[in-house]
Length: 263
Image (tube, rainbow, N blue to C red; front, side, top):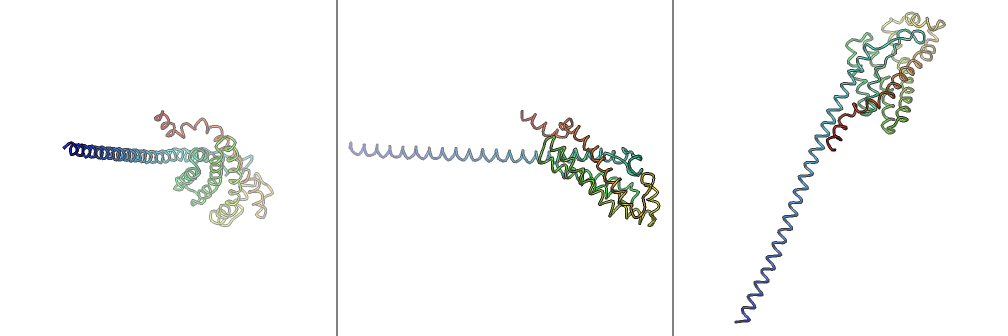
């Protein structure tokens, strides 16, 4: 009888041990499942947060492009002046590339180019050159802001901004010479002036008395277009260099707000 009781006790003890192991195993599994669910929820929350942040960033970029484009358009249409003692009177100094350059430093080369393109597209309904002048301005403007923004993107300091502006000024002057030589001047002479070179020659003779059809491009491109565009870019680039840092907070407002919320 005693042996029987001992056997029953041993069996009960074995069952209790197995039950304990089973319960412990279930607890471990439940804890593991809870941790996995917690990780999943956290990942979903982070993904949603990142998605919202990306959408906000895109909206912010579009808004800044819109503001800078509007400013660029106003400068393009109304803020310009000639320097008739240096360049032909129909060449106007204007700083409408300045907002695009600021946008390029703040947001990158693509927004900078977008500002140039949209600005010129907005002016096309008021064109006096069958949109050829605006197309030329798009090419020349992009030749300025694109290299400057690309260089600054890799070297985000004052030296990088300065070198980027100088590179942009050089590429702008070269592109302006090419565009004028092969697009603008042939268009104006052939279409606007009916093939009559005298009209154009008379417009530049106050500055270049010895100009003729044969040497026109040497005078106009070498003494007019190239230095004119270098000066224009130096003015816009110099202003951008001086005001970018003071305006940096406004141009990066979404990141500043984000950092303030995280604090």
